[in-house]
Length: 249
Length: 328
Image (cartoon, rainbow over all chains, first blue to last red; front, side, top):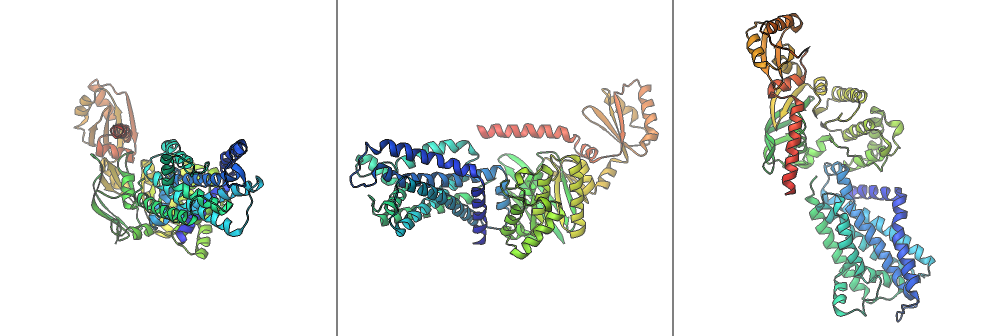
């Protein structure tokens, strides 16, 4: 456990120290929130949504922020590989599972912090937190998204030689995961074939879970969302540790 | 008892044999140098001994623990300074040390004391809270050595410890390494392609070429093998020169190389006139001539027939070829 803590500590320290990254990664979500939220607020009318369209996408944008931060945190071990620091960890008398878990928990922590910042900013844009339990549910779902997608990033990074493939992963894997997740649109009104794609996307359950926590209603039952997302997290951690165990430098 | 034993160690990458049936033993408290050109297999050997790379075949043990079956114990016994930097630049020097100490599960009270002690040893204690990214190359190297010592290893691996450092810093580092070995009795195995470095630091030297150890002895004995001083003569008529001077009684060895002849003999200054006279009698042109005390460079040339520089060029070609193959 102390090893997992050590690696967690390094990740969090690095995150808090790089202010430019912290601020820079707020740009995109904030931009989407303002442009889409205010731009479409008057034209899009969602039945049963008191907060309007901007209220509807707030949980989606929070999920996006958590998603991107965590994938990036996982893929970061490629930097460690290139700058040589990974050797220092791999040659120590610790198991690779401990290293991988430390990295996953560390990445998830930074992702949740990033999500919480967007959540706080949303409060200024009209989000109202009605009760504490809803907030806790939202954080729990953010944590699950963070854990699963950091592990996902580690799995990818274990197979990548350098950062050249990063754009490819971003454009063909991460953006589709975000786009299909129901972060920006309600899944109930979709044509059947897109709807089934949406339901295959693990992030959908994260978005729906956070939406339930923050707005009090969702299209998917939160306990189902919780079970599916937890299952996905476990699978990703297992796959990530397996691939990380065979990483070569 | 030996600190390191290596028996018939082999590492292949595809068709390319990087380490070819290597065998050697290192005594406790010894400073052992693996000397050879880039691409000779030194780093591959170190990687296998430090459990970072699995050997294709053969056996090796470090501090009595088998590198295949007892990886964790091997890892606890060794400290390592890699050829490429392995520090986290976004952390301070102290934090890098602290991270290492935690990874090796050193209890907090001991950890803090040891870190300060070692930072003082490498004279970085006043800069311990600076981020590593503002450190110079020499400071980083010193920090890495301090870090490698934090968990009190029995064996310290130094892979090209002074590569890319200025002469002053190199001398400074050599002093540290010598002091470490003398005061703490740590067994040190270092790789280098600097002759003078191996000459100064190592008790014994193994000369590695193309994955094999071609000679292993003290620096002194290796040099004696050549036979006293060395005269190098650059000439286009090497064959003629060779047959002309071969019969001179003072000369212990003569070797013909690509553009020069090297002659091993005692008291070279005394006999050089005789050699030059013999050459001019036979009307052989001498382009240039040097007399010097033998260096390990001469030793390398003696055992392989090539200078280290030539060998490095061909290793680069080999790597380029390997990369091409991989791309296909």
